[in-house]
Amino acid sequence: MDATVDTTPAGIASLRQRRRRTWLAVVGVALVIIAVVTFLWWWLYASNYQSTDDAYVAGDMVGVMSQVGGTVVAIDADETDRVQAGQELVKLDGTDARLALAAAEQQLARTVRQVRTVYANRAQGTAVVSQRRTDLDRALADFNRRKNLAASGAVSAEELGHARDAVNAARDALTAAQKSRAASAALVGRTGVADNPDVQAAATAVENAWLNLQRTTVRSPVTGYVARRAVQLGERIAPGTPLLAVVPLERMRVEANFKEVQLKRMRIGQPVKVVSDMYGGHVEFHGRVAGLGLGTGAAFALLPAQNATGNWIKVVQRVPVRVELDPQELMKHPLRIGLSTVATVDVRDDSGVQLAAAAHDEPVLATSAYDIDRKEITARIAQIVQDNIRDGDAATAE
Image (cartoon, rainbow, N blue to C red; front, top):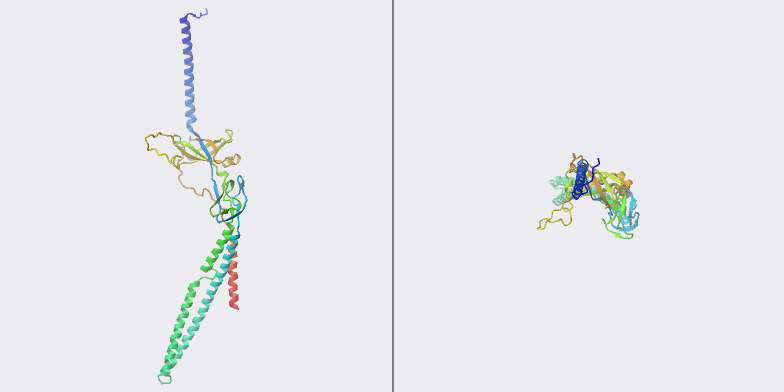
């Protein structure tokens, strides 16, 4: 027999109470399930990842500067252009440098001839010493002969005195010639003309002038993209003036600022996923933790916070974490310095270290763009030296 619904006020109130209890039970069970699922999700997944949206793209802005002063006569690259390491970017007027090189070469030629004269004087001094020694021997022989004859009265005392004076004069002349030869020898030393210090100094001046001429061409130190051009055509620049900035694409990285409470299990080498606002969530960059900062952003600020005040309020600090990205992914999806990103670090493997254990074996950045092959100027210097040595020999022979 079907149960009848109690339509009395007491029955309706009882029915509503039973329904309320049922709904409360259902809601309670649902909340418990949600809490359990949330806890399991946090325990199994979320606790193993640390994420922050306070992360931005960073990179190296390699400055291009001139090593010499001059007037800009050509600019071969502009902003957004890709340049190769060693490529000419700015050309300076080289007139002054060419004139300085010509003057240095002329000075080298003069120095070689002067040193060649010193060597010739040394040879001449040796001959003079031999002559003075011969004169002394002759004077001694004359004196000894007159001294033997003076006993018999064949030679007067006055003549003997003149002979003695001649010996002393010849001996003084020999001493002076020997000192003059020693002075010449001290000037030339044991080296040849080409190895003489004065010639070497003049040759160094020629090489320096040649290098200054080569440096009127300003080259890119790295391969990358021109991010900023500060030089204008016709501008007179001084050595060390910033001309351009080149950003190497493969050196792009992310500076992620994590809260201090997120760093407990963070280690160098842990994998990182980065999503850029530029490309959205469908493009993921993969990288690794390259290093953790040694101070908070507030500590390194231009005006650090002063917490020793009466109205101090604790603020969770953030520490910068450097994330290196995959160069291949950067080539496929280029980033720009300053873009906003979201970085997520997988901290499950926390067996690594928080600080680097050793220094880099190789330079972080290096360039050979400023290495100049000096074979050309070395051969030119040798030719100048030899030409002027031969000219001196020819003049001596004549």
